[in-house]
Image (cartoon, rainbow, N blue to C red):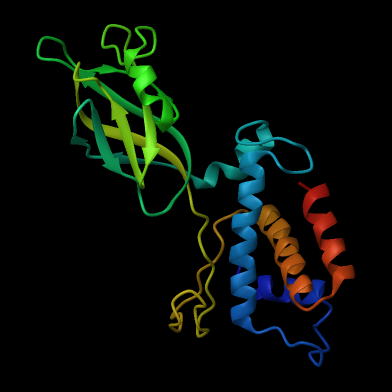
Length: 232
């Protein structure tokens, strides 16, 4: 959906197409509210705190709605004591999976199964013979800490690269010629939402809900909140 249509729909929902005499809504406010609404909506869908109580890949609809955000990045890890670490991409939003090929001096690279675990229990996992990294079983675990992913090897095998699958941050929309509220600079071109149009319709309701609350129009706020969830 192009940004002009996006703005018209938001003004229509706010009943401001013909009357701008009550709490004028500036373009930068629409940008900020839409981008905030996009993040809020995505977090609810991923965590299952929505009307249908289905989270990340909990249904075909959730898979279809969120697949646009799912991406894979190849990370170059740095060897540490008992683990390899790599910096998480800047557009990281939520973890999905880690995969890699581990190898030893005598064996070729093989695919591993990697489990995400709690940083607090690392010592227990390393001591447990059924849970610690195993080249024979092609299994290990990883943690997230300080914007890095740590893949544990217990010095039993080597890793040359990590495939990091994650949900990226939803793209922020920008309006050409309008100040970007995040950078303070004038946006030279339109940047449109990457979601398909039916999702953008829900994000418009999410945006209207935020703007209506900002101008204390609680009737419109309640209607938009109902719309965005029951059509989810």
